[in-house]
Length: 261
Ligand code: HXC
Image (cartoon, rainbow, N blue to C red; front, side, top):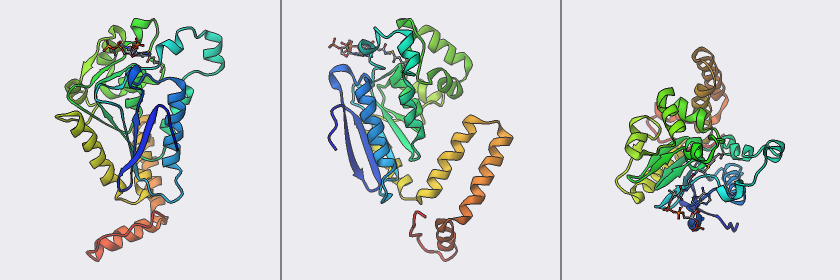
């Protein structure tokens, strides 16, 4: 499939890559770009052959994404923002069941930072620049930034960032737990994301899907409820072929051949 604002590929076994590609606007996330991103994610997620096991989402060395498209947004009125539930389509990314690894280089501002935070794992390069500068435009984060940033780094730091609009660095993102790793170069960051995606894609799809589901549940519920939810999903995996395959292989000192069923 041909896209205008993104490039898709399968650079490693079981790994899909989506590269945001609107260089003249620093990957500003206009509506057609988001439509293409959602379509590409769905195509990887719903592939009947289950050939894809994880997705890497990245941008350019200069920008992961400099935010929602301000020029597209500037004349928007309340009635159509509310009436058409502006930005709701962005949440489609969170409905994808495959793990998504964001490899962030350069600017990840506003909606770009929010998009990266929607991913399951975040890696960044040494010159990544994060921030929620919406306050400078007279608005606030609108794609989950206030919720996800606060859960990730705590109330005081999230307040500082959202209320001052000040950017933060790759080192800070890593130190605060927003990103899991900083790499020494943009290439190393993308390669590191592909390496991790390849490892994930080497496992049974059902167990990976279940693992993602239960970690996300930790975000949504209290601990006791979350632990119970985890246990129920865990019980369910004993109805899968891959559980028998994996545990039998271990007991027989063999390498598992996953059925993805
Ligand atoms: C539309 C954008 C854009 C954006 C950059 N561009 N960011 N266009 N929306 N968010 C365009 C510029 O207008 C310019 O186009 C071109 O990309 C290059 O950008 P420059 O500003 O010339 O580059 P530079 O001087 O290097 O500055 C980079 C920058 C700056 C610091 C990232 O572009 C910037 O501040 N951008 C806006 C960041 C921002 O406020 N993001 C939050 C948006 S609000 P031309 O045509 O002039 O060459 C948001 C709301 C989310 O995301 C809520 C719901 C999702």
